[in-house]
Image (tube, rainbow, N blue to C red; front, top):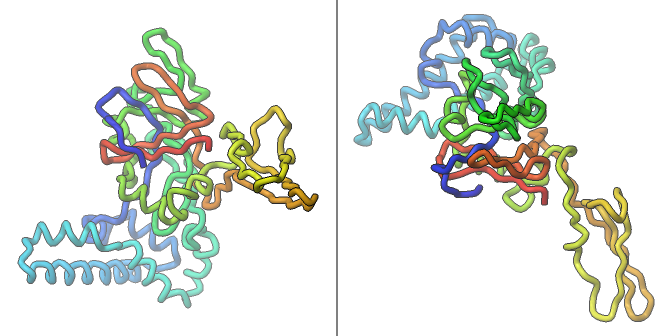
Length: 319
């Protein structure tokens, strides 16, 4: 995570995070959306209402508990909303009902139930489709958002210069749209939201922490490869070394290579290195660059994603 002055006219890409079920959704048991969602998992309408009612009852008990500790009702509700993972509890209830044949059939067809990939999401505003991925307890868009608003003026494509009437829609198609922070806060479709700094950190921690998360979250292709061989460990004192060219040519950057070390007695030690991106979770982060004051930088080798916390952004570089 990077802290910076977001008051400047900075533009950056964004991905949206699926929002947890709100209290309003949980209490509205006749909601057509919820009934349809849970019936798709193999449950009848009555079973769906029963499962959601269990979550509602638990939430009410937690609220009462905080109120007994002296919190106001509104404060207690806020605490429960922030700390209680309704989706996780619902998933546990679904697991308890796994003996149902209809539910088992739904599990095989809805990949997100397995905690890997979700179904594609179609943005109802412009009918564009986004791949989604479930990583840990979070469901993310696996593509940068490309929504230009109802009036067509929300955000920019990398390289756009509106005053000069220069447009680069091909960059939006590949890398998504660049937004300033105020635009980013309202760009996500209903049911999704701009991730907070804490939610970004949850993703980074799940992927193994700051030192390795970038390698696991970046797409395998498109990034301009960094020549990692120049940072390769040196051979010991008195030895000589040579770098083998694996996956490239001497004139192109490489992320995978071998190093041979020969000591002063002629013994040869061969070490293989691999710093290539793996896209281990299907997040497929792309280097959409960033911009400020109508100047752009970083396309193909830098990704800068907005956070709902104004001073923070999630940064991935080519190395």
